[in-house]
Every structure is written in C-alpha cells, then in structure tokens.
Length: 232
Image 1 (cartoon, rainbow, N blue to C red):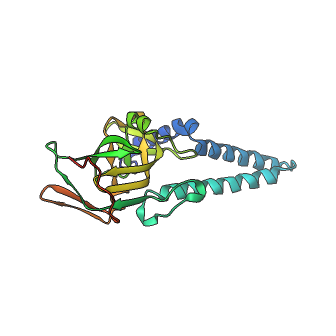
Image 2 (cartoon, one colour):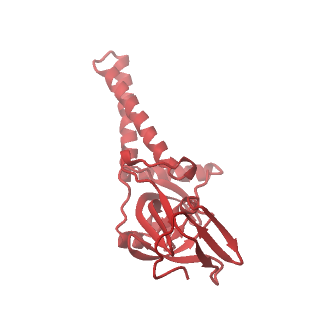
Image 3 (cartoon, rainbow, N blue to C red):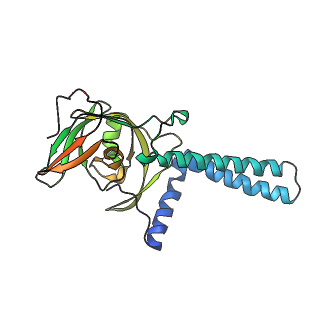
C-alpha cells in the first residue's frame, strides 16, 4: 500500500512529477527550494550585467540549495535503518523500538492485525511487510493529534489507486503487546484510505521477526510492560 517505487514509464514519471508540483504550496521546504532557484537565476543575470550584489545573491542561493539538499538527505535517511541516527539538531528524535516477544495470529482474511495505541489512542493496524513506511489514516491522525512535520518534504507513494503524495509525521509513541516504538516516522494523506499499516520502517528496527505456524512473532529489544489489550 505504501511502498515507494521508481516510476517505470513516462506516464508514471509525469504523474509523479505532477503530484510533487501540486504539493509545493504545502511544503515549506519545496517553497524554499523554488525561491532559492529563482534567486540564483536572478543573481546570475545580475552578475552577467555587472549589477552590484549579483554575485552575492548567486552565492547565497547556492548555499541555500546546499542546505536544503542536506536536509532532504537527512530526512530520507530516516527511512533506512542502516543509516539510523538521531537528528535532534533539526528537531527529529531517534527512532527506537523496544519490548519483548509479541505473537500475532493470522486473521481469517489472511492478514496480520493488531490493536495498538498511537500517542494513547487505540488504533487497529495491519502489518504489511511490503510497505516501506508506517501509514495512518486521516481520522486516526486527527484523533492522535498527529501533524505534518514542519519543513518536511512530501513523500510520493505508489498505491492501488495510483501515485499520491503524503505528508510525513512523527508518532511520539506507538505501543502494542509489549512493544513500544518511539519517535517513529509515519505518513498520512486523505487518499491513503481507512486502513492503518505498520510498515518496514518499524519492522526493520526489531531484533527480529518471523512466521511460525501462521503466527507472526515480533522480537524487539528491552522488555516493556504488557498492555491490557494485546494482538487479536
């Protein structure tokens, strides 16, 4: 549902580009990028015509674009646990998954479902090993008080309904069974649907996970107190 894929043809590329362009007004980082590019273009024209401050404007634009690039790389690195590190300097907490072993039986519909708490709000999640990111519906985001990350870049997702853009948010705490995930990145968008998904950005931070006799077994680190409501 939420896995990110490289567009396979020109139609997909056009759809992805259109989605990103539509997201520009909603993203402060994209607005800053457009402004820096325009400022660099203006500075180059001024420098060629030997207008004062043209070189300074162009240099400032270059520095701004370099800073934006670093910010984008740092944010995207959070989706890969091999590059996991805290970014407290830019307001992003470390992503930590702790707990003991939790067993989740296969549901009649062929999926693994669990009941979790998102910032203290009860939420039903489907575990999807094919999803890159954890995703929450807009009603859940509203109930849990989740907000789009300030300065974050929209994420392009390929879903069953086509290519969409989603906002990145941070879940302070997601708990289920005796597992606690803190500072977890998640995506949300009105057209993601009503299904909430736990993706690989959580599962890959576990000590391990496996399937035995149609039961999904999750094994993180550092045991946590067991919640009253565990996986169904």
